[in-house]
Amino acid sequence: MKTISFLTLVLGLTAFQAMEAADGKKTRDEMVIEDRVDLKGNSDWIYNDIETAKDAARQANKPLLIVFRCIP
Image 1 (cartoon, helix red, strand yellow):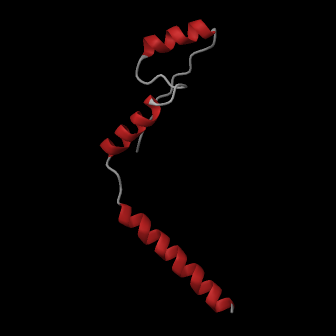
Image 2 (cartoon, helix red, strand yellow):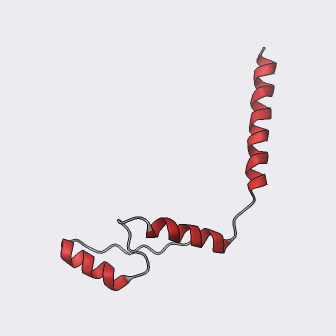
């Protein structure tokens, strides 16, 4: 019984890895575009507009946090 459970686990993990590999890696450009789309839809982030960010920080009387993001 232990052999069957172990074999099932190994086959399941192998299938999962095969599916991940089939997706393929995204190019850097695809990752940047996807990231930008995600952040543009988020009202908590001000993307690539330092003046708007400064104004929002002043109005809220809160410090400004600038994040430099690197997408590998």
